[in-house]
Length: 377
Image (cartoon, rainbow, N blue to C red):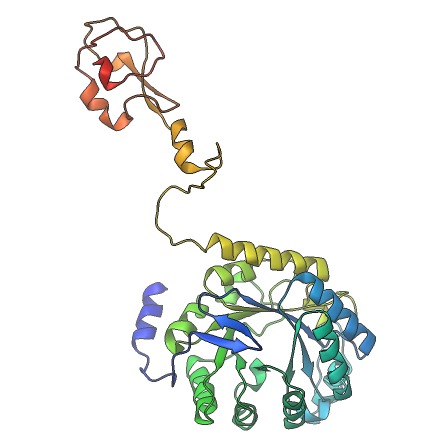
């Protein structure tokens, strides 16, 4: 598979992206290379049409330690047509049209200012995904620091251009996309003079059937192909941390996952969402993963100024083996194989010099189970 991927990357045109970008500034928070992962709590439709729920979810989101809480500005009539459908979603059915399916996910746009104010009071950034020009204008007028484009909207050049013209950073989700579709979307945004683009890899299945469907190596592919910051939007089993941790280890600089106070709450997104205590632990594990990946990668002992025993590899070297006397060795005795044993701790000749010890003459007596030093030979 790695050979196939290498060949795939080698075959790509060199002008996939108009401009390489390492770091993007979202409301004063730097996102990208060598920066902490930007963690987004995605409320989605889990407000369930009640602003009290929306405000409470902001409270919970702030308590997780995440960077951002995100909503979705959806109006059913603005996102889908009245196409007759027969959808069964998480046990729900009876939607006569595609637009009707999105009715439970609608968020009244008049909530926006209050939600933004509440998020600010709680010390967490507010973002929302727009799905129509009206919501783009509203969010822009209220000063959101960036726009998120959902995977399904990634191929909508009209909406992309409208968002790009606002001149704000864009987080572009790439679920379902081929690489050339991602390249096209980036080019459309660039044509409007906007280069502050961040990508998120995701699999638009709720949830993916198996962990292999996460295809996390695509994070590296996107970063190599477009030279842009790349993150990960996770739709895997909400009880699993495999995807998020592996993604961050692969260098994902953005992480997003759906969030709810109750998985049986009844919204379209609840069943796929992480609950507050779970998300709090997820944030902790992401930060721990960043720490685990933070050193320079030089293979050498880990040492601290305190040099605490069992907590410092330089000091702990004393516990390595060295050559000891397997039995009493008399002065003048020729050292043979059966005279020697390797034991902890270090204090004698290193085992790698074993061949230089055998055949030597003991200069003085060495008691059994005592370390043998060069001075003894």
